[in-house]
Image 1: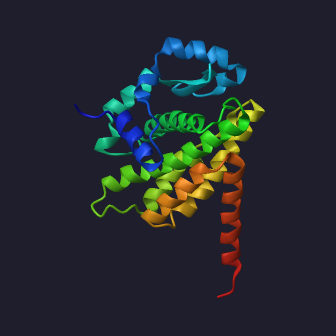
Image 2: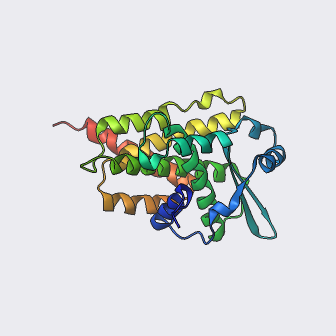
Amino acid sequence: MNETLFSQIQRLFERTYAQVGINLEDCLIDRQRCAQLSMLAGRSARELSELARTFLRTADDRLYVGIYYSRWLIDQLERHDPRAGLGDRNIRSLIMFVEEINHALHAALQFKSGTRQIGSEEFARNLELQAQVDTYLVLLLFVAFFRKTQRVSRTDRRWLRFHLFARSCPGAFRDENLRGRYLETTQLAASYTKYLDTLNGLRRLEEIRRFRSLDYAAKCTHILALCDSARRQLALPN
């Protein structure tokens, strides 16, 4: 049986990090259930995208995950399957698709490792930062697959960065907390992925596995240290 795009992306993340132990496709929910969970999530959740969402809750020391994709988003990916080529017609849909899988997977991995404060702002920012970093790397793989040399050009990277980072509009959120969350994580992810671009494949894999193991505060410190190091190198005389 042919693998779905969803299962392929989940398998890619699991090969990179760790097995989550469940088929995340079983966590897909319909529009009606999404509306119910959105109401329970509170006022700020109304500002989040209606095209794709991930819902998390705990009960009896178990994690429950719900992943929602709108019919429109699925139609876009079916009509312009990124496995046949990535372009302006499908990149935004693919970004949203990948990010929700990533949220669910890393939430499950953190829960398995003992994290229980899934309602905290630090937990939310950690998931968002990790998703933006991982999604950028997935996009690179899609682009490279369709290049004869398997190499991604500077133009390709600028295009990916535009859609993933530059097109992000955190300032549009009325909720101050959401505005701060997406502004901070987008800036951090944009900086960190520039560093990842300087590494070869093996070093990049080692780096992102270490990065994933850090909590949010440690991730921030790590990225800021890398930025400081880069600035000092630029300031050195020839």
